[in-house]
Length: 260
Ligand code: PAF
Image (spheres, protein in one colour):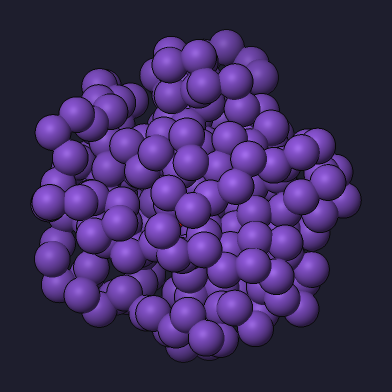
C-alpha cells in the first residue's frame, strides 16, 4: 500500500480506479465502501483528509478524531492500493481557496440549515480530490443522502465524469441505522430512537406525512421529517421519493433516510 502526502506526487493510474474519500476515524461503514470499490475496480484509492472547509464550528474541526496510524493499518488490511493523506497546507496552500464550489439551495436545506457552508466545503474538497485521483467510480454512504445528492449534482454540473455509487445504509437488528453516535444512547434512548426508522417505514407504507411527523414528535425532538425528490431534494408528493429525517434523542442527533 502506497501512502501519498503531497497531491503533486499522485500517479496517473492505468485501468479502473475506485475512490473512497474519507475524513479518517475509519469504521465498518467505510469498510463496506472500500470492499465495494475493491470488487469493481483495478485500483482502490482512499483519501484521509479532515477538511476544514466543511466545519462551521472551529471546535468541531479541532476535536475531530485523528489517528492516521490506525487508519493506515485498517486500510492495508482491506487491500487498499493507495492512500492519499495530504496535510491542510498541501490541499489549501497559502490558506483557504479563492475559487470554491457553491451548492446553492441544495446545500442550505435539511442538514445544511444547521451547518451553514458545510456542503459548499464538501463539494469543494470532493472536486479537488476527484481532480487529483481521477477516479472512474467514487463510493459514498447512502446514510448521508444529502451529501450523495450534492456530489451527484457536482459531478453533473461540472462534467467531472465520475460514477457516484451509494452504499446502502447498514441497520442493526432493531432497525436503527448504524452510526458511531449510537454508542452515546442509553438503552432507554435507543428504544426511543427507533421511532425514526419506524416513521420512515410508515412513510414507505404510504402513511400521511403530517400524521407520521406528529407521531414522531410525540416520541423524540424532530429537526425535520420530509419526503423529497432524491435528485433535487425539493419536497414532493411524487413517488418514488426519499424520506429523510433528523431527530434529537437526548443529546444525540440522529439522521436516517429511506426510499419510498
Ligand atoms: O463524508 C465524509 O467523510 C466527508 O464529507 C468527505 C466526503 C470525505 C469530504 O470531506
